[in-house]
Image 1 (cartoon, rainbow, N blue to C red):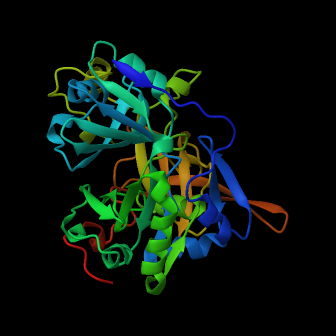
Image 2: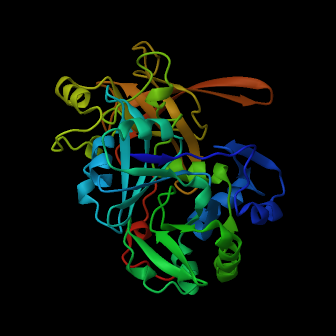
Image 3: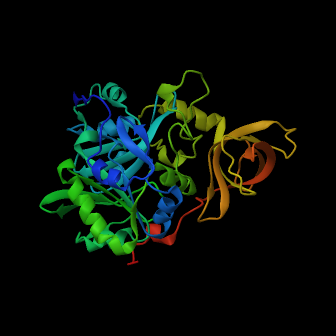
Length: 399
C-alpha cells in the first residue's frame, strides 16, 4: 500500500474562479472543503431554470477525488463498498456507498473505472484516513488528486448540443454512466455522462492548466443555447427534485456521529439495490445481513405535500391531529418550480412510509412578522419527482 496526501494552506481558488468571479454580482460564497464555492452568482431562480431549460455549468473542482490504482485495486474497492465493482467495466461509472463495520453509511459517491485497473473515487467528504485504513493488506496506491483535476458539471437539455458543437467526436455514443476520453486543444479531457440534477448532463474532467481555455470554449459554443454558470442553491433544488441524497442532509456520515442511532444504513436510505450479498466480504456485510433478516429501524421517503409552503426541518406525523405521535422528520424540502409541487425527502420510523401512504407534516412559516403553523397532508411516492425522457436518451437529440 502506498499513499499520497494533500498539503495546502488557506482558502483555495478553483482554476475556474477567475471566470466565476467575473459573473458574480451578489458576493454569496461558502467554503467547500477548502475551496471558495458560489451559492449564487446573480439570481438563484434564473440559474435553476438554466438547468431545466438550457445548459447550466457548475464548478465541480472542490469535489473530493481519489485515484486508486495497483494490482489489488478491484479487490480493494470490492472490500470497501457494498456493490460488486467487478461488474463495472472500464469506461463506466458506478454510484456506491461505503459503510463502517456496523453497516452504517460513511458516505456515498461515484467510482469511475477510468481504464483497466485504474479508478477515481469522488465524494463530498474527505476520507483519506478511512481509505488508508481500509487499504491494509492490499497492493494499491491511493492518491488524493482533488487539486490535480479541474471539473465542470454541464447539465440541461441543450448540454449535448453545446458539447457536440465543441467537436467531441463520439460523444453521442455515451450512455448514462458512460465515460470517454477526448482531445481538447491537444490535451486529454474526460467526459462522463453523469450529474447531480436528474437531467440530461455531463461532467468534464481536465488538467487545471487547461481549465480557463475549456471554460471559454464551452461558453462560446453555448452562447446561442442559453448557457449559464450556476451556484449551489440552484443545484440543490434540482438535486431534491431528482430524489438524490446528500451527506449531512439525508444522512450523517457514520464516522462523524457522537450519539448512537443518528447514522443510517444503506437499507434505511433506500439503497438496498447497492448492497450485493453475493460478494463474500465487504465492510459492514455481517451487520447489514442481520438488518435484512430482522428489519430496519428507519425508512427514507419522498413526499408530495399539499400547499406551497416548503416543509424545511419539519416533523412528520402519522395523523392530522398528531395524536399518533411524531414518526419522523424532513431532511430536504423545496417548492419545485418545474414540477409545480411542494416536495420533500424525509426519514420515518418503520413500518410507516410505504409508497401510497398518507402522512402529515407540521410546517411553520413566517408572513409579515407572524409565525403560522400548518398540518399539511403528504403522500409517499416511490419515483423521482423529475425524470425527463431526455435524461436516458441514447443518443441525446439536438435541442
